[in-house]
Amino acid sequence: MIISDEIFDETFDIHTDDPYEKSQFFRNKLAEMGKIIEKKNELWTDGPEHRSVVEFNILEVLDPYSHVSVNFLMNGLKESKLLQISAKIETTTTIKEQGFFTSAFAEYYMKTSYPAISKMCRDRANAFKKGIEALFMAKKN
Image (cartoon, rainbow, N blue to C red; front, side):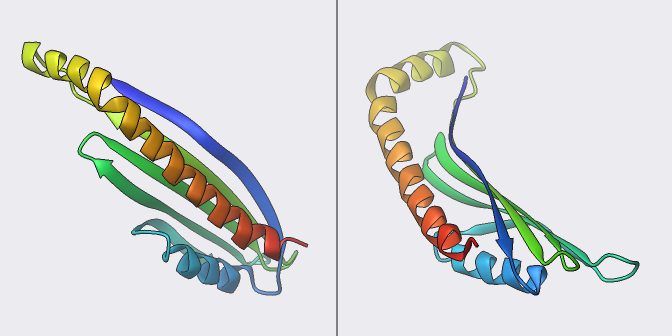
């Protein structure tokens, strides 16, 4: 059983002289929110365009079955002095039902623990959302 809920999905366009440097600045600021799981950190300086891609997640585990994931993709183009940031916040609960006992546990978890954990996930996701909006809206031109 997988229950997933998308809380936030927004794209921010930020004008800056050095998009890669600014993406590293944002990554470091966002690291204050939680543990960063880096997926991609690339800078292309050869050819007519200088581009960068920085992709990472912030993951907060609330219990063995539920977590909040904040996913970032930052694409920079130095010539146009543009950094485009996509941010998505999701809550996910996963219980692998492989037999009678895990099915019984899944039913028990959904009745007893899930309502409180779901509220905790939403509260944490909203805190992430406020932090993201405060950081990126202040930088938006």
